[in-house]
Length: 491
Ligand code: FAD
Ligand code: S2G
Ligand code: ZN
Image (cartoon, rainbow, N blue to C red; front, side, top):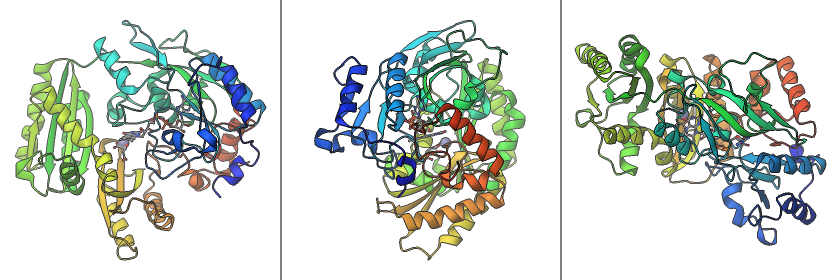
């Protein structure tokens, strides 16, 4: 079974372990949550992932309040060969954040202090358990912007964002978390605490191997992020958001080209939503279609600029829109006239995921492709799956098109349970379609449980064996997030 080999060398936590863990947290009430009489029902929110596809059976959730407590917990679990699943907001979409079976869940939810934001450097230092929305609000109040933003911001934590190397909507403008994390504090499986430029965070620090990058995107398999130092740019005083309707994907590409040319340095986000997804969002969220003249348009584009001078930015946006209308690249468009309208446009984009989830079981794919290939890739998938499946499938597509990142969602309407044989079939066609186009089977959501089995196809054996050497160096007992990320057979 999926849990047998990964957990074979590990122990199930016992009652004694629970008592010991409680002691490590000074017997703080609610420091350790234990499922009553062995049933994990009351720990469902820690055991079930966001997609409801991955379900663990952990009976023990530990909720440390400090780095020292994380260190003591890991040291204990490592000495007892007990598996530990680090958990942030539990919004991951590839099954990395929940146990395979009865591993201990170590939740960072109680480590949510924001320590400082240096107004000169823009370096924000905080605990890993800070919810992203809280950080965004804190930074905005101090005229700064946390350079990562995604639909899960109300629940996901910065420690989880860093551990998944989350992309999000402003990746093109502000870059990866590899670029914006200037310091990390991490606790290793044996309890060692690594402070990698976190306490003394500098924009430039060229003193030794930059090990923090190993933990960014490692999905909790090398260590537990307890603190972070983020480089936050100034909050752009001038934001402009426009929602456009295009009658073809070629015109989406044309709009992207003109956006890069005429918005240039102020271009901050360029997202697309296909017609079926927009209709589904408007239906499920009971919102009117945003552009009356674009009923049944095949594509919508959301463009946002971030600049420092409203007049200057407005002039560029006007020029951008004029070219689009003159060249007939858009059939309709609206520019947000207020923050409320701006938020309403983003609400449509960020409702794609929940709207799909409410309409049936969603087989989600987060891929990188050459942008012109998006439509053909989806058409080929439809052709491959048509009338070879027992249930009618609907296709909803959206994503960060400027990054070449397609979110392709195949929904079995009305059926809310996963079907492993259908998943295998869809997986195969999706990954064949990605591979032949030289894309990536995971643009930003990581590997988790869902995609680790493809690692041997993605990387040469030398590369994989070095990844395993790194894993062995930091977590020799393989207690951290067992059964995730690296393929099973990689020794
Ligand atoms: P969790 O789900 O709790 O954990 C994620 C992984 O990191 C797990 O492997 C976990 O073990 C590990 N982990 C968590 N915290 C720590 C820690 N402190 N130390 C070490 N390991 C840790 N993702 C994107 O990249 N871009 C998007 O645009 C995007 N949009 C989303 C929209 C919605 C509505 C949803 C539900 C998800 C979206 N996601 C997106 C996926 C998800 O939100 C991100 O992967 C996010 O970064 C996960 O953060 P989290 O705190 O929920 O982590
Ligand atoms: C997004 C996450 C949601 C999904 O909407 O940007 O990263 O369902 C995605 O794919
Ligand atoms: Zn995304």
